Length: 211
Image 1 (spheres, rainbow, N blue to C red):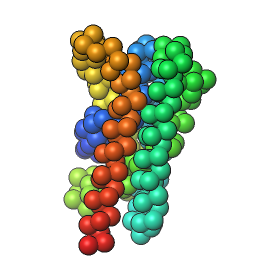
Image 2: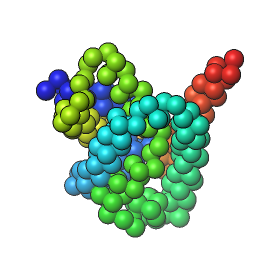
Image 3: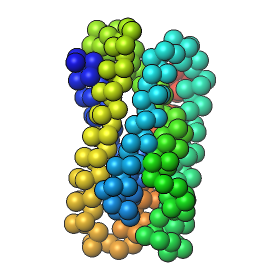
Image 4: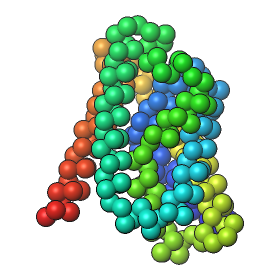
């Protein structure tokens, strides 16, 4: 039970800040409703379940291969810029519900699977948290106990993203009338902002490492 509770809390809090999965989940909810959002999140947490198991088993390897972590961070920046362009093009071409083509070509569940497969920046995130929680004695991952922890993290991610979507949707509903242009291009701007934030974080991290 302790593993489940700790995994749930860490994952829910970690999934609440702005990230590209959260933003796409919000767009999924706006364009296709609650059922599609739920299906999308199930795909997301299925991949996360497997990924966290992998980081638990390969924690030492990942810790010793800094180049892999660095590569995932660079790719995440490039991917967020690509999403910004995709959402901008979707708005400019007046596609269905102003969403990119990749969000209409697949089922929400498959889209959740695919997008979280390439969400590589979560690898160092979970590697760091897993090592901390294990070393601090907050979780026990021997034998089958690790599955309780990973189940808790999956439930936490689902809950955190769902809450994020519901809250932000209410905020956007109240503010969208203030600026039609901003409302139309909001998602592109969010992804550009995320790319900038990730770039600054990347620069500071490796500048300090070199210094």
